[in-house]
Amino acid sequence: MAERFDAVVVGAGPAGSAAALALAKEKFSVLLVERGRTAGSKNMFGGRVYAWPLFDLLPEWQKDCPVERFVTRESLAFLSGDASLSVQFENPASTSGRAASFTALRPKFDEWLAKKAEAAGATLITGIKVDELLREGGKVRGVVAGPDKIAANVVVLAEGAMGPLAQKAGLLPELAPKAVSVGVKETVELPAATIQERFALGEKEGAAVVYAGDASMGLRGGGFLYTNKASVSLGLVVSSEDLARKKVEVQEVMERFRLHPSIQRLLKGGKVGEYSAHLVPELGLGMRAKYIADGVLLAGDAAGFLINNGYTFRGVDLAIASGIAAARAAVDARARGDFSAAGLASYDRHLRALNVLTDLERFRSTGGYLKNERLFSLYPKLLLGITEKVYTVDGSGKERISDVVLQEMKGKAPLFKMLKDFLDAARSM
Image (cartoon, rainbow, N blue to C red; front, side, top):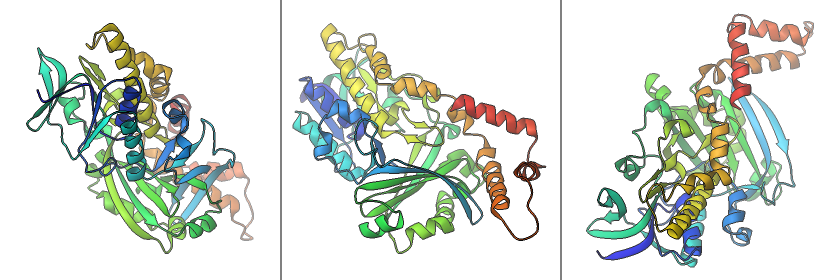
């Protein structure tokens, strides 16, 4: 046995680094293992971070956190053909306090958070792949990496959506196509001055846009756009089941999305600096059986702690919060001298205290609702069709808006289905 630590954390993404930092603050000896050459080098996300859990983890995080831009403008855009319709909310005051959110680049953000864990006393090792969980008497007692066996009282698995170690621990079932989406993203480089002029933003202000409709070629999913200091993050999250069923390549969907006139105007003159893709678990609690076992806790994507409710995409904030909760559960287990599943059971309570499980349960039916194909094909076209007629003045005489709505709805879908979709939306969101 070459090494022994109080805790081993696998994965130096937001969940893993948050867990390692919180554990180190509690005087645990912590090993943080990352298979990438640097923290964040293999990680991908849309580009937005909701800041609230950072106030608990690092109260003075704003001093040196690599923030690209604080999000002061939210938009929801519907695309159909060459047309678009946007709903916009702007709040310049939303750059401080727990309700702030910001855009970030994963290599910079993840490295910053991992270094905070190191500064607190955690040992970070990169470029190492953990192959197995070390077991004694059927219970997890550490990890195996190549020829090395590292013993620990508790292992926190923050290894991402696929979770090979979590699967070996019997915590993570094999991901079914219906439960997984494919996320792709391009980082398009543009001068900071161009971004500020084109999006009408201040020097530190940022914009976030969620796209529906032709953004995904009618496939279940949607698009997003976030502004960084000198680049724009543009991406899609689409159903892997739909891609296979309709025999469409995700690159084809991304190409069509990028070429929409409303997107092209925003990206004109830009250069693609980075392209990335990864799998996204979409059903939250509905697809995860367990996140606690003897000597093991799952955090972040590995535990399915993501929320997509159609107008916000949340992953990083839940990852950081779950890392904090995992550390608090380990502290409780140390006080009891019991790192079994029963000894770590307070993880559930801490997840609720930080509203991770509370929010996941509140939106637990949204994943199923967002599988409704009409949301991504029929309704955006219907909405754009109504809007076009309302704003068209060509001398042919105007109709009442109620008549326009009824005319556009006629023959599109049975009224009772539309009413049911509306009620389902109200319940799930």
